[in-house]
Image: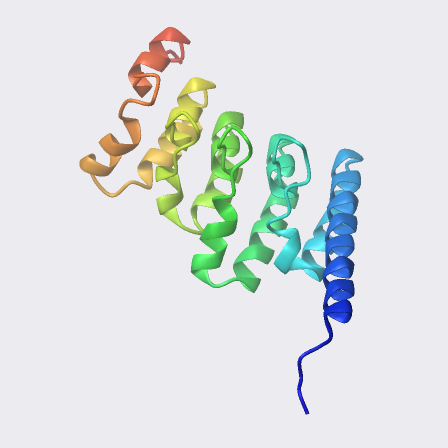
Amino acid sequence: MSSVQPPIIMDITRAERRNSSKSMKEELFKYAMNHKWEEVVKIYEKDHNRAYKAKITRSGYTALHLAITEIQEEVVEKLVELIKRSCDPAEAKEVLTIKNERGHSPLHIAAQTGNVRICACIATVDPSLVHIRDGKGKTPLYAAVQYGGKKAFLYLSSLLPGDDHRLSCCTKTSDRMTILHNAIINENFGE
């Protein structure tokens, strides 16, 4: 006897999965927008295979991106811990490199906030995440300087093993700017 399902049943199953995925994304969005972060964490616990990668805003943010944007340190730590626990290292890195429409990974956003605790939480999963470039070729190190996050920059640069790696994260971007150019233009070079 064949285990192949008739096309009508397969179509219904696909439709159910699509509706279920849409519903989960809508729930994540609703809870994140209403600052119900514990509910977001519960969805990540329950449906981690889809929840981790679900882009829930028009601009391509995941729930993790939004938690970082709102500097929800404890929530970010819980979400990242769930990712580490339920994914192998390669999958965890893949989840933490999901980019929004501007090409910003979670670490880019953490660096923009200047929050060292969140940067550390993400970067300790895989220090090579500091090399990820956004849509304009900027690394999280560049983002930290651009937004005045001196402590975040210093922390992230400490993860780089040698001068060659540090230089590769600080090279010119698609707009031909280096981190030093950016620091001077934005006057982010003082105390």
